[in-house]
Image (cartoon, rainbow, N blue to C red; front, side, top):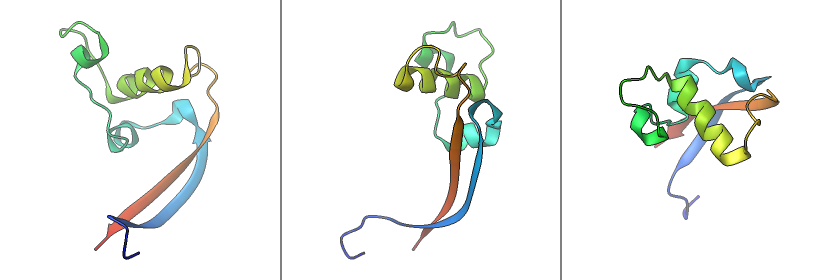
Amino acid sequence: RWASRITLEITGVRVERLQSISTADALAEGVNVHPSHHGKPCTSLYSPVQAYRDLWEQINGPGSWDANPWVWVVTFKVLP
């Protein structure tokens, strides 16, 4: 621990389908919800879940969101 920059305590673990992500969970993932950062018109309605979907497909490839895989959801808190 002496060399770590951050210490985390896991507070929960669950399994859910990718497309079941909530708005709060998408924001907790750190997505940027400004449409221009995803090549969308600035006048478009752009939710955190849509931003997360775009990020997921950017990382995992086209069609990966539609596959709707099971994912691990790990919640944690930062320890001092």
